[in-house]
Length: 313
Image (cartoon, rainbow, N blue to C red; front, side, top):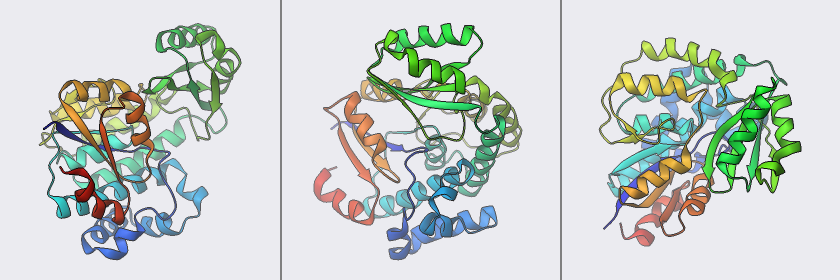
């Protein structure tokens, strides 16, 4: 029997109405959403369930919304199946979901923190000055070299999300990202697709947001992780509160090493991944990293009910 990892999605997975089925069906899920509303002092739940979508897409709304939805699905999934993972990981914002699941952070503290994180990220770079794009088909080293050359000429562009073989997201100044759009073929890119995002996330342009987040995190109570959480920045587990704090600060302006994190988990014997939260973004990436792993997406009441029948876990 192989090991199990629970993984949690980040920005891009959000959808108006996510989690509404479990909110209406289960008191345990409802209490999570209610706690988020209480922590923030407004009805995040109403925004999640009713939209409008353009409001939900604002990063300071998206981040607590995804965290609350993932935690509600996790609460219900655990109560139904009693399954304990061997490891936890999350993609960018999803790392906070993993840390709550590991008992490192209290849920309400985490909700307030990711709301602030979103506000800091939003304020770090004036609208229209930053950009991101997905680069398909390029080799990591070749793209890194091209980014360094372009950045050296004064137009910042960096590797932001190393998602899976053949899919790397770049981030930086509008000019830097546009240069990769125009020159991506030099690094073997088949396509470069500009992304609809509000800022150059996971690039050095986010350092002002990191510094502000550091002040929030320094005042938070954190516990040792009860389950190993693989950090985006290192693609290795971090367990001690001080180490986790620093990694969360660095994460805002550093690359998300998702492919490396998943590969490390597979090397530890993980053969079953359970994606918990809205959408199936991570399931798609996991299958591109290693087709042999078993992947389940817990993103609806129906998916929770079906899990036992299909998984034999």
